[in-house]
Length: 271
Image (cartoon, rainbow, N blue to C red; front, top):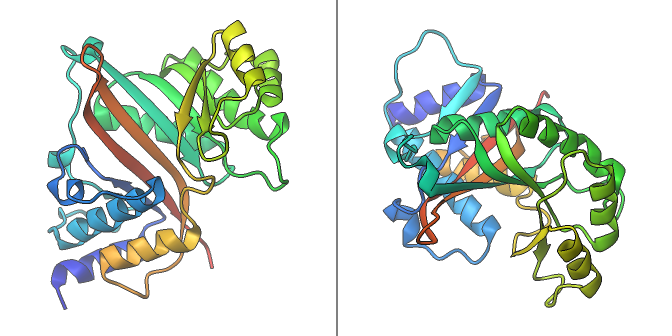
């Protein structure tokens, strides 16, 4: 058996948290050749390819086994220099798979650290699906309070929502101390923006954006399958997706992507 593969297997069996960074997808030729049909397919390809590269890589020597396993490649990460920061817009969409409150702060901290910035220009939140059929203000409030704290500490400049209808967006706006600056609308659920939502957003200066992300970004089984294929280990189990952060860095004056990528965090499930 490949010694690198054996080493990766041991590290994965001992760690409690697994963090993966795809690196800059604009420059990753292996992934650029593919044209994924959906966000879920792109994420799956990214996890599989990054894990495969990480398994094949010789790991740095370290005493003991780390609780947090970092699956990333510094050479594939494009950090932002202080000189170019003003010319760039750093936008993030954070998909929460679990309701844990620490996830938002952890994800924002890791994004800032990865890109070498002190603040993200905008963060759009996609909370975990509610247990009931529809979202409610009570379901959104815990995550929004975490985002508000990050705005106050200047880690984030603007915060936004995803898939809120006019009534729920209005409830959130009236309750929130830091108001939503944007709301994403899924084109699959409405080909035309609802007139009441458009009118409310215009009156309160909320930008309406479109997206094509699925309600469930990645199922638990799809995540494990991507890990297994990347690690070349079909027995791999016991990992639960915690959150996924998708970032994009755009050159303001030209409207082009300088970099984009995914940060993924998973936790070991206790048997």
